[in-house]
Image 1: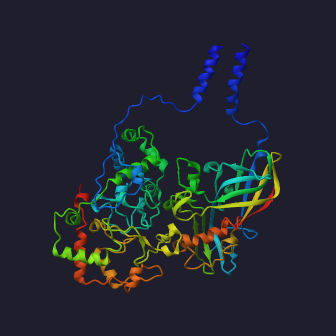
Image 2: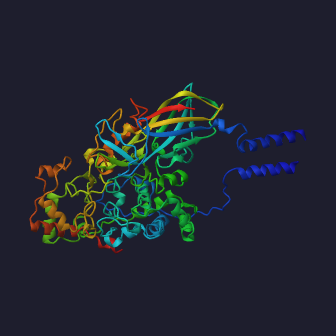
Image 3: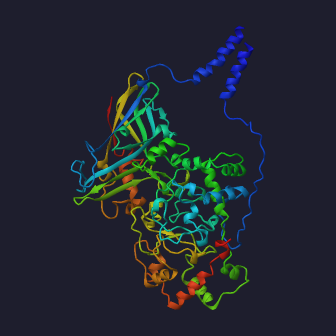
Length: 339
Length: 281
C-alpha cells in the first residue's frame, strides 16, 4: 500500500511543472560599456532595459547577418543594411525576397540608441519592437518568428550563444529582438572629420567646408540639428510624393491629416554614403536634393512652415551647393563603414 | 488501512478533475455565432470589377459599390446573463476565442463556442478587431490565429503596425468601377493609460439578443447581421468615396476612423455599429 502511495506521489511530481534539474553554471556575460560621444543627446530609455552584453552583441550580429531570418534563406538584415554604405543599399527602395520592392528607402543603421522613433514614419518607439517588422513583412523577409526559431534551433552555435546570453538555450522571439537591438545599439558613428574639427579640435575645415558649414547652420540646421543632425521631428518638406497605395507617411501612424506624407528628418551623418535620398529614393545625389530645394518644393496644406515662410524654397547659389556638399562630406565616418 | 484508502481516494480526485469533461449532452452547451454579411437585408455576393452577380449597393450619397473581398476580425466574445454578469469566452486567447470572418470562406461565417455554462443569456458583447494588449502579431503565443490571419488568401497581418488588420474590404465604386480599398487596424503605442501615439481601431460591440438564449437546454445559434451598407452610410458618418479616401494611401488613419466608427460604433453613443441580432434559435 505504501508502495502504491509512493507511485501516486511520484505521478503528481511528474504532473507538476518544470524543475531546476540542470546544474546551473553562471556564465560571465558582462555588459559592454558603450562609447557614448559627449556631444550626443540622451539615449532612448529602452537602451537601459536592454543594455548590450558581451554575448548579446555577438548573437545579435550573427542574427543580423543570417539569411535564415528570411523565408527562403536568401536575404539577411545585412543584405539591405550594408555596412560599407553606412548600413544602406544604394537602391531607391529596399528589395526583399523574390525581388519584391518595398515602398521606402532603406534607412541607415547608425546611432539608433539615440533615436526616439524608428522607421521613416516613426511607427515604433523601441528598437526591440521594430525588429519584427522587416522579418515578417511580405516585401522584406516574409518570414515568421516560429519559422526563424525552428531554423535557429538546428544550429548548435546558436544554442550556445543563446545560453551564453540569456542563461539557457531557449530561443524566443523576444530574445531574438533583444539581441539584434543590442548589436544595433553598439553601432555608434561619431568619428567624422566634423567631430574631429568641432568636438576634438584636432583638425580644421578646408575653406569650402567652412563656408558650407556656415551656410548649413543658416539654412539647414533648424531641422538637421544636434550632433545627430536631425531634430527627430516629422516634416513635409514638399518632396515628390510616393504614389504607393499604402504610403501616407506619418499619418498612417497618428491618424492625423496634418501628418500626411510627413517623414522623420534624416540624420545627415554618413550622408555621402547613403544615397539615393528621399523616403523612396527620389533623388540620386546630394546635388539633386539641393537643386530641388533651390528650385522650389511642392506646396500643400501641411508643408513645413519654414518653407511656407520662405517662398517654398531654400535659395542657394551653385557655389553654396558645392560648399554645403563639401561640408556634408565631413560627416562621413570612414572608421564606421570600414571597422 | 481505511485511512490509507481514504487518502488514496482523495489523491485520485484531483486526477479525475484534471481529466476531461463530463458526459452531459455537450451540444446543448454550444453556442454558434452565424455572421450574415449584408447590404441592408441582402446577403452580399462578392465579385470582381466586371462581375454580373456581385451584390451592388448604393450609398446615401448615391454611389454604387460592390466588394471583391470582405474580411473582419471578431474577438473578445462575452455572453451576458439576465443579472448582468458576463461569461467571457477565451477573451485572452486568440487561438480559441477569435476568428477572421471571411465572406469568401463559408466555414468562417459560423463560429462554434463550446462548453458555455448552462444559463439564460440576454446579451452578447464582442470586439470588432483585437484589443490592444493582444494585438502584437505574437506567433509563438497564438500560432493558430496568427496562421489563419496571415494566410495568403486572408492577409490580415498589418506588418508595419505589428498588429492585425481588423477589417479588409476590397471592391469597386461608381459606374466606372474605381478601386475601393479599406483597411483598418490599430497603430497605438505605449502602455494602457499612457499611450504615446497612434489610433485605437478596436471597437467593443454590445447587442441585445432578440430572445434569451437558454444554454444547456438545447444548442443555440445566434445570427448576427453585419450590414455593410453602414460603411459609407453610417449612423455616425456619411462618406463620399473619391480620390482622397478610397484607398489606404490617401484615406490615412485619420479618415480610417470614419470607417471604423461606421462599422463598429464609436464606443459611446453607438455601441452596435453595423451589427444587429436577427435571430436566436
